[in-house]
Image (cartoon, rainbow, N blue to C red; front, side, top):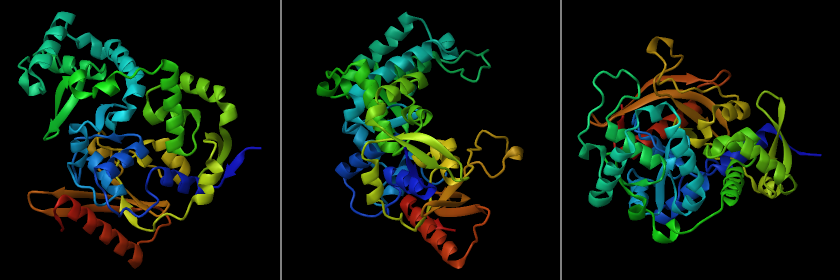
Length: 386
């Protein structure tokens, strides 16, 4: 018989695996930050900064001694590297040997997609690569080619931009550093430490590592959950892995928020992990829309009964909530969402709207918790609550 996890156990396990069960306090230095990122697996980057950029907010949510710029320092010191999971992300440098298949997958994806139709000829690509190798690190602003004047395609951009991004996806160029969030490229040999770059891992071992490490960070997962975690393997590859490793995995039955149940897999130490779980902190916290616990919307709704969608690309008149809305987590329950923005020039954090979930009351105690969180996040970005 498979092990059955109640909905509460499943929520607590998932939050614990993702570093949101404990109170977000305690010392944090470079080693602690690197450990946090390794525990998460990756941190997604995003340029939008309504309060703080996604990567900074994600890390601050787990340790409120984190400060903006700390993640950049890990990339500059080669403790971490940038590449593509579901989007541009930062990963621990020790993961690099297991990421080579993703470079190959992304190279093929770029060249065989609509993007590939816009890619300049190989001679142009070689010329740009040579210039980066000789003059780098360089950003897109160091090149002068212009996008086709008659192109109305959404992907229209200068040819050099296609080349730099294409070479970055393929792993031939790497992010050397960012300045004001602008990416500076250099050749992988100038960015990735030699001992890391020289290490070769077979394709089979890369896939095994990706699946096993995804499962460890998820706590329990269906084949689809595993595939979506890194987005560095196809679903058929993941299914083949779970079938091959079935004797090493624990089959579990997860009770969803709606009372239904579904089958999943868990690591061999699942029962020990469950025994060690304690109730999560009762703090009320604002999570970023790209937080790992939020990103997989299907898993979020299945476990928490919280229907959340990013509406940035939805026309204003059709939005149910707002452009950039933060989910509110209290303990192991999502209790609402809030639209807030930090105006750094004026030094004010303003709240535009608050929506409490059905059945959640805005009690004095709950509102006090929210006010405390708003004060904390305002201090984090150097503003005051308006």
